[in-house]
Image (cartoon, rainbow, N blue to C red; front, side, top):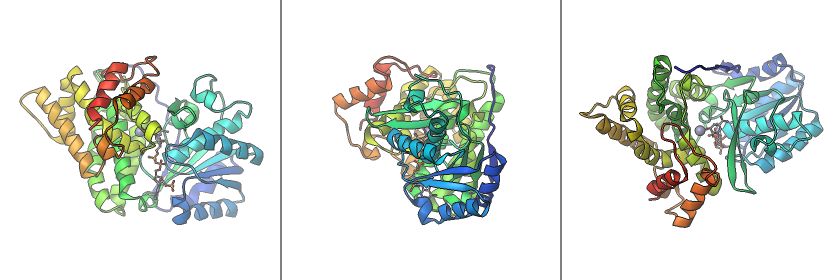
Length: 393
Ligand code: NZQ
Ligand code: ZN
């Protein structure tokens, strides 16, 4: 087990009707002028936004709303929101939505606290973030885990790049998590969420670090739970228990718990981000489309690790570790398909791509040969290209 620091300061308020505690939580964390961020309209249609703004008003909190966050949230929108937030005099940012809304809210908090800096400079590591505003979350989709995570992902459409920023200043102060708020999700988004939760866990689980029993068993339990609950939820999105399990798995999968004390990989996430940047596909779909190819390319680095995954998560054993590994990869891909999730470029809806496009994806993912990705299987630009080729069918 490696040394680690575990810092997960987000207060979780979980369960039915918890959205009505929003104002009291904001007050507890010192907010009085609240900048409310939401997405493309699902929270307007469900009545959640009205419920939240009424709750703020009844509790004497001033607020201003900013809707219109696009999935794969854009830097240009965040910059616009920062301007409005500064003019309003925001002292607390509230996200009502999913990962895209939360990540935009984090960007607004950083930009408002640093009015002289263009926020992209933080994402490009040209400036170090040293202060921000508090952020609270009312979660409406279980997927990205941004409600407890230390990261925020933005897409700069001017240069076609999707990038994450990791800092403890990205950790929200509180997360209100009422599984009932996810009942209105389309099945496609439930599938995307289940995949993303599995990937946050697997991108940590596939590691060569040894001696991490508790971390491994937490990860395996998250995987079994989200896989089983996903099967129920995709048929019955209003199943409270299934949606509750998925919601809690979503937070645990990405708040650090599933990878403590071990080196993490995250290559599939990097490969997926390029697909979202170029084709604007949903994050979870980008991951299921690439994961099987990454896994087949990488498992030989340590078949025993995949064999453990086979046994503990899928109940699969075989004569050899290699055989078990391949069976587990197939079981995972079959599961994605059972959720109607894509498993290659055709099912992702982008079609088979030209050699030129694949080269572009590999250049961008490797920062023009300026970095490698992953640690379980360290992938340079040529490895990245091979994996994209495998998924290109
Ligand atoms: O925009 P609205 O109208 O709200 O619709 C959204 C959106 O179309 C819809 N939705 C959300 N809650 C709903 C709902 N529809 C009906 N009923 C509800 N209750 O779902 C769609 C997707 O929303 P989005 O916020 O994009 O989903 P998700 O939570 O998957 O977030 C994805 C983004 O988060 C980033 C991804 O890269 C992507 O940009 N990630 C952020 C991470 C982090 N900050 O820690 C880690 C992740 O790995 C990921 O990279
Ligand atoms: Zn993710």
